[in-house]
Image 1 (tube, rainbow, N blue to C red):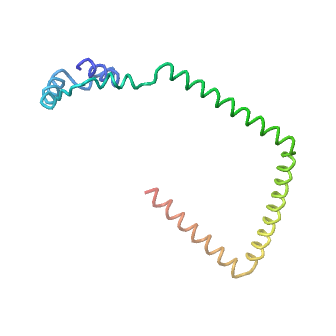
Image 2: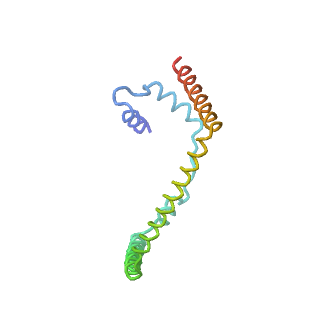
Length: 146
């Protein structure tokens, strides 16, 4: 038990041990009263028997190989189906229409924004909001600098 503590101490800090000899003796005396001897009753043997054997490991490896083969077969069938059904052209057409829709809606949103900002009361409110944000940012920078 002392060897384990010494090894742990040496691993954590090789230059200076965390506990000296007197501290270790005091700790051993302190914990000696609380020591409990629990009978094993063959528990360790039952746990070791319940661990997977090499035969079970071989079965698991075989099952894993079958799963990998099935996955590879499904991927190959998916690629063949995509080629036969001209999946790339369909995906390309879908992305092209999405790009056009995005550009049209983006240009529409930009036009609406410019029209809204162009009105005098909206421009004044936008400038007032920017001024408030700039003031709050400046205050925070000055407060952080203190």
